[in-house]
Image: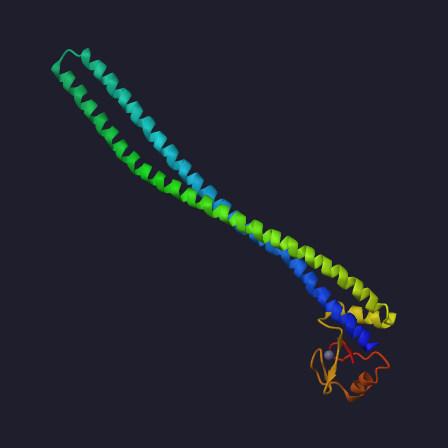
Length: 227
Ligand SMILES: [Zn+2]
């Protein structure tokens, strides 16, 4: 019984390990997706910033245009002016508006530099996202392949387990399964009077019973089956 049960346990350990691997993969895929999302957000923020610069420039151009129209109007007015004083007054108003225009143009120039930098930043972020997407696609397809392999292995292992377990007494198997569900192993050796599961020193009668292989012997401390 012990030998068959040990064989079952060995397979169960492999099954458990593979099931864990299969469970880990979706979590890792999700992590990749989160990383990708961060890249997308970074790109969106860069594009937003670029748009803001573009609209600021447009706003300045509109303001400049309004002032140029104002100057045209003032020049037209000058034709209808009678006195020298009034003419001079309009001239200085025009000069004032022109000063505003060149102020706006300076501002626009520096905004254009910011716009160029923002555009370069956007392109960089876009390239980074593209690389990341390709990497994630590669990783995901590798994982999909891996998971398919694991599923096949699990199927084979379960069949082998079924065959091995069919040779074990039901009561033993049920007890074993209940313990295995909660522990790393359900069946552990007694080594020099110590439980191979929890490493506690066992009473002599338990060691004796475990050696005899005639009945189920459980460790008093951890409840694992002893052999
Ligand atoms: Zn124990």
